[in-house]
Length: 383
Ligand code: CP
Image (cartoon, rainbow, N blue to C red; front, side, top):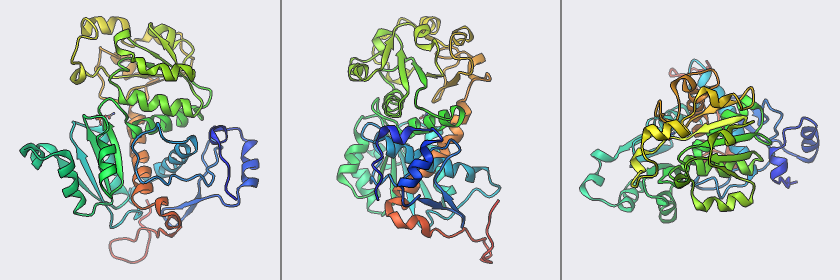
């Protein structure tokens, strides 16, 4: 029986819902990554049903159903444990090749995709644009075609042009992961943010989330607004009028609040998400000066006084200290900025696993054997 998992089901966390769902589900999927079969349930009582992530690509959050997002998060939660072991490696993607193709700078995303691929035993190849033939004038599509000719199992791409990953997905065969395209979407960032919120709050549904800053240029904000509203959070954004895009009208109809003062957005918030001022995308004067921006929109300790008592503060990085966030907040006890980075590895392991050989291949999930040690004695390398 296929569960008709609608959005409300997918995000319910009530313990009394779980037995009811279990009764309805003939099969609870399991993830066997180390010889141990783990039922895909979470610490929060959420149940992963037979809603799977069966898409070929991960291009954005906008097109995903709540059940698919929950499945990605549950899978990432299962993978999180692997990074805590002494030997942080499982053979799930042995023999697969993941190419990181980054046309924009990145510290967190590129590194964590590489680490994620390696922890799953895939071969990770980083294409450095500055030393590739792109610097000789080769187009994005020609570069991608040539990389495809080497049979990768997944290409992770970051590009300054919105829609670049979609173009590659249309023209090629390999699964494409959008690692950030212009000001459009950054789906794995929203997923790792959601995983971090769920880890600390136990749920997404019903939370009040304030997103502060340069929404106009922020692919992180777009992906987060899609994800958080799909999973039932109440979201408000605040920033200078010049940095709050008109397109967000569609979200306003769906309940998004748009505030001019950050104080109004933060009041009662469970989660305060601060966005980076994107100096590289400021091709016009959206505000008079960084100093003025910091005065009116920089997050400081006094702002958190009106948030929920246990409010958490997040930032996708890299942070501009003293501009959009004061150091005392970035380094303070409410800050989960480094937890976000940690969860980035688990989310990217889940995404690579599902796209490059996991449940994409459906039944293969249950066939993954334990990692053998180097000497081939058959003993687990379990840490
Ligand atoms: N959050 C984020 O995308 O960081 P990087 O630019 O360092 O990848």
